[in-house]
Amino acid sequence: MTDYSALSLAELEDRMAITRDNIRQLIEQAAGASGDRNEERIAERIEQQNAELEALEKARDALTARR
Image (cartoon, rainbow, N blue to C red):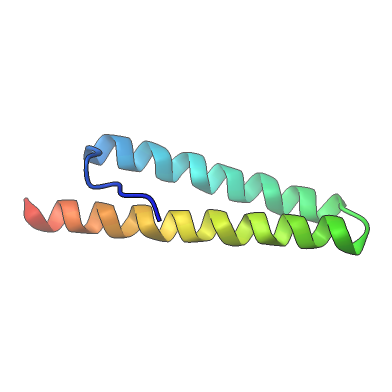
């Protein structure tokens, strides 16, 4: 897992927005994907992006709690 503790609140929020957009794009790809292999690969990528988003949210929450 990546350590996001060195990022500012603005940087965390930017990364969260990018990650949310990545998830949206992956969901769109999944809707148009055909074949089990493609769907599985996209599902794995969505899972990875969701995990990253959770880590970013935790880092943001920790940063705002310190203020």
